Every structure is written in structure tokens, then in C-alpha cells.
Image (cartoon, rainbow, N blue to C red; front, top):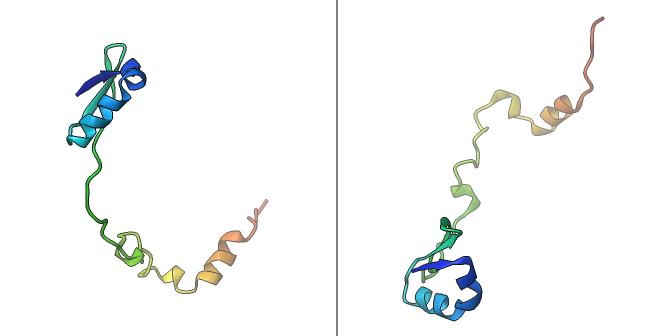
Length: 83
């Protein structure tokens, strides 16, 4: 379904009915495509553990990160300049 920005205000019920029919709604403003509204996928979302995220444990092999407290103390130190 194609709608204009004005249709969002005036034909909201029809837009929701199109989404109920599993149609994608494309929004145009001054003749240019501005956005797309997709219907929500039905069903339960899969529960994932934070350990499944690819960033979890990404620094586990770094030698300087073996002691996190010491690493934080080191990066918080002030800079020393030799003049």
C-alpha cells in the first residue's frame, strides 16, 4: 500500500487494516519515498543469553586484560611529559 504523509492523518484506520492483512505500507512525502511500515511478526521472540552475543568475551585472550582492576588503574593514570 502506498500512502502520503497526509494519508497518515486522514486514513489511519485503512492503514492499520492493511497492516492486519500483512501488507507493507510505503510512505511518500512530496513524491519522495520517506519510509516503510512493516507488519509485526507473530510468535514468541527467542530468549537469548548475553553470552550468545559475539562481543561477549572478545578480550579474553588479551594479556593486558587478565587483571581488569590493574588495567583500569593504568588507563586512569595522569600523563607524564619529559621536557
